[in-house]
Amino acid sequence: MKKIFLLFILMTGTFLRPYAASGIEGRTMTGKISSGYDDNVFEDPNAKTGRPFVNLYLDSKFPLPPSKRMDGTVRLQNGFKIIANDENVAVNQVNLKCAIFISPRITSEILNELKYKYISTSPNTLIQSEYGYLYWHSGLAIHFRGKDFTSSIQYLHRQRDYKDMDFSDSKTHQIQFETNVPFSRSLTGRFTGKIETFRFSWQEETLWQEETVQKNRDDTLYELSIGVQWIDGILINPGYAFRKNKSKDSDEYSFYAHQLSILTAIPLWGKITLQMYGCLQLCEYDSQKIPIADPVDEDNTDQLRNLLILNLSRDVLENCSLEVRYLLSQETFPPRR
Image 1 (cartoon, one colour):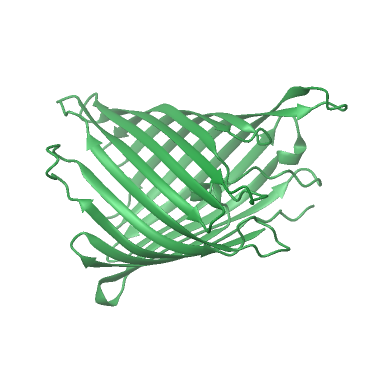
Image 2 (cartoon, helix red, strand yellow):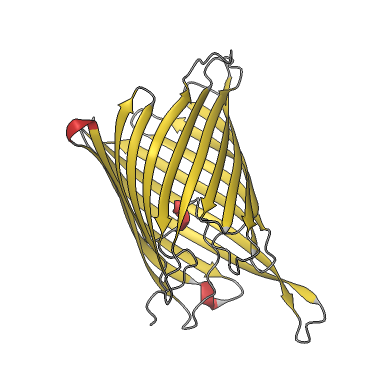
């Protein structure tokens, strides 16, 4: 399945500057207006069903009252997407981060996020291109700063409930370790390890369709990744990850994968900056049977395993920039043994 976004950011403006006249010190608000075209809205490889869309986005940050031992922010993100005349998408998200300073070298952080995605479709629309859900996560992170390195450990509990009963709701527990080591003023190395346990739940009709039964699938994902970051006039951040997923109930979803990624930012002429992000995942499943693909969240590019983003941006006013973006994502089934 192949999907191409050609996204022209018409204006990225900061509507209210920090320390705005609202009277809340440190408050910031950023707005974006963009338009683009998706050449394959319904992910159908045999039929092009592209449609234009318009995005409106507002990002607001509010600092919590600071103290000697605690600091934090509340972030509100509101987005609205109009896809031709067939479908409207509204996304509302709130993030709460609170840092507690335990010692000069140790900091703990409380993480919370709540996200609601609502889809409004026309009566003439037979197939939706996006799907509504309620998502939340809550967790705790501990950061340690050593003499020649920084390390962190993080636990997250996540849950996603789809409005459409045909999709699998999910509950996730994640533990992640990360260590960063500066080799020089410009070069930093990164090592990350992660373990995630998933439970997918859905309703399935019985043979005679007289009633539905609860079905579950339990997966465990192991991931090790390494990367480096170079900052000296330009930014280059390549990485490699080995991922192993073991499905308890079905070999269809058991796989191992090699994932390559790179992020770069290069200043060009006329105060124009070029940014590029690419991600490629080479995957091998244990089963010969093709698994049923889970729905992909269009707002979360972390879920797209084969991805290329090219971005050109330039500040045109003090609080306004112009941006042109090209995004290519492709979800393909892996080669079979």
